[in-house]
Image 1 (cartoon, rainbow, N blue to C red):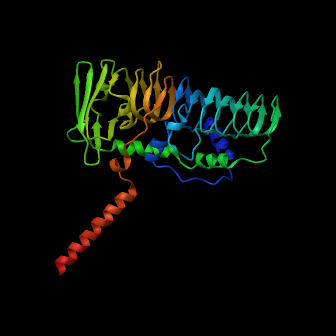
Image 2: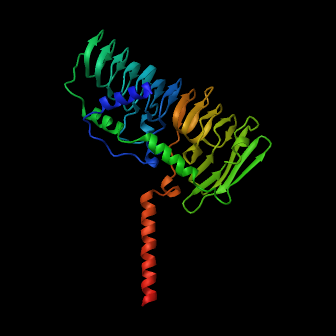
Length: 357
């Protein structure tokens, strides 16, 4: 509770007085972010695209492929709490709500809401607290300095910093991830979606509907599919641009090889609804949703897609396979349902009038 309170205080101090940007939908989140974590994240690897961590972040390299990362109002890395531990941002800048210790922002502007220690900023940077042993290689500001040179002081935050700060608290990502997972879990499995388990191989087969949506309900099979007995996943998918896999087990582990091109990850969403722990130790393909638990990719297992979880233990790379499907076609928003109901109501009124006439 104390940690959450400190993170909340850091964020409220950091973004006080900054106008908010428009909040993101689930579709926009999946397209703009490679990783979104509701709590804390630890990393010994790298993320190709944009990352958001609501809690504290330790280690890792971020925005390895800035030119391939979708445009967004958000910085390349946004951290609500503190950032520390041999952490590098290689593109699109950073916003840190708490303190920064041992971080390097190689490209882009940076804003730190707390203090900065043993850190390097190669672009313009604003440190709201004290700067100790910090390299300001662009324009810089800190409340106080120790062992720090600042040859080009900033008089105020820049427009780029302000825009990234405004975006940083514009979306309640915890709510977006929770709602997305809940709505996906409520979808019925597509009638002819088939799962064949033969030996150590699982084959997923099916055809998408008119909108390209294909849903696999794995809730009665997940303990068989995600087990040490399974060594391969294969896919026979037709006309499917948004493929959703729903499970409901609390703890799941996978060691299977994915027999599919990495690009398939842009179409797949693995919704581990209700899971408290999901672990993979082989390359995993798709967008991984663990709204209520920790996702771990161990032993250098890469993710060809994205990670959207309560917590993330990253030991393998997360590569950009940007979601290319549409959640709006799979799960209509409340406004869409309202319009449909209104339309049905109008049709009913017209039918009654015809009968009266």
